[in-house]
Image (cartoon, rainbow, N blue to C red):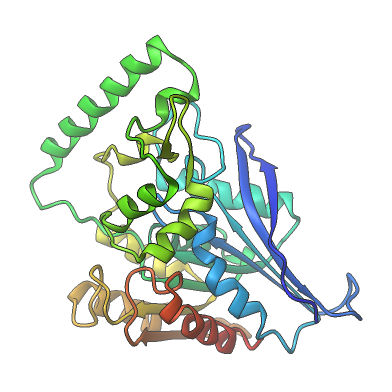
Length: 330
């Protein structure tokens, strides 16, 4: 089989937004459109982009043996990477990202596929797999178990005020300048490497190598010189809408796909002893209704030394790829 060569691809979403991505394929010399194929769509976490899957993708497709054709399409969500931002009047909600998955799946004509999501992308993948169960054969979530409301109880009003004040400030800026530039960060760095070092110290820390990988699609040159991270700054405005735990649990129960949960045992987001983690894994394993010919299967793997970006970091990306390949019987 030939080695995977990532190709930049673009799609037009139903709302007119351009969605960019990376397509990697492994094709046997004897492959035809009718031969056995595996199709994988991967979605990234908050403020990341499609490059987050590149280390894992190379190792994963290198393991393909039982399928004559394997495709992995990693996309940039709207407002991330090389994709367009959402229209100026919109706020980013989980269902907007889920709609991007649907739009891309329709564009590439994949009626059924494997869906991989990391962190926020995992939460969106859970939402999509519950809403469109017939389209997802296998669901793989990395460092995610569905949406988590992390706001302290009783803070709804304060968070609502914070969001509206932040959004009003952005609205006023857009009233003066309706170009996409108003959505870009004003923080610039003299070199690409300095921009990557700033990302290392983000909300979730990553290595310099991982930050440089994300910078490939996540950093551009600022009009006044220097480099800047290019994600839409509206993504950083915490909006007050949050799913409650009961709603997320209902989503988990509605998923009919086989599920693989991949977690890092050195993550600063999830711990195996967390009550929420235990409860949601219990739901996935015990409370999803099985049907004839569709037995419920949930596998949970904790990767030794894995951080929140275990699929991106060089030390653990190969082990994540091995775990995924084994689950999918590639």
